[in-house]
Length: 276
Image (cartoon, rainbow, N blue to C red; front, side, top):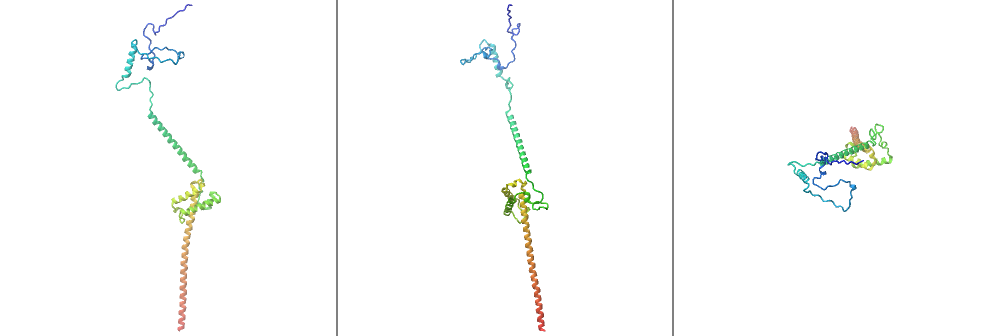
């Protein structure tokens, strides 16, 4: 079978001499300034050696007037913007707002830090509340009045007798050194009472397990109540003793007067009898 050769025109249309329109391409992909013809071969088919030197840039010649004209127009269009207008790039630019982003980041970090600080502060307050609630509460009633609506402090503490005695003596000594034992707890200076409380709490760390350190407060109140009542009782006894002494002296004087009057009356009667 004979081989037939069909001639294919390189143009889009055989009747027209105009080439087909170029596909839409980016500006940097167009060779506007004229360059040598490069074959469209694959890179794998090319032989690359170390001796190869870059090709010199082909300068536009007089044989390419159309390309030079296009390059001139392109340069004028690029470098001759309208007054007051800014040349715009054909590529979409991604705008970065660093200040607003940094400000937003700082605000976010500050809000997160504040939230975290609030969170930890809430946790600390919750833990302190829970720890305070977990401590041993104060019994109801007045200390030192068991069986009469109160309680016994040693029984409520449930310590061994030696530890309780040590706590009692140490607190009593601090009370006598810093407070006025002739007055009750309500008449004392709050600052001095706090000094005594702090020293006792430091000496006996187990008191931290009791809510608000109520055993120390009870011990101070009981001892001052005892010493102040003892002082009042002594004052009353002294006043009563003075009264008794005055009464005794008065009775003694009255007795002397009576006996003196009797003696005088007897002497008078005897003297009258002798005269008669």
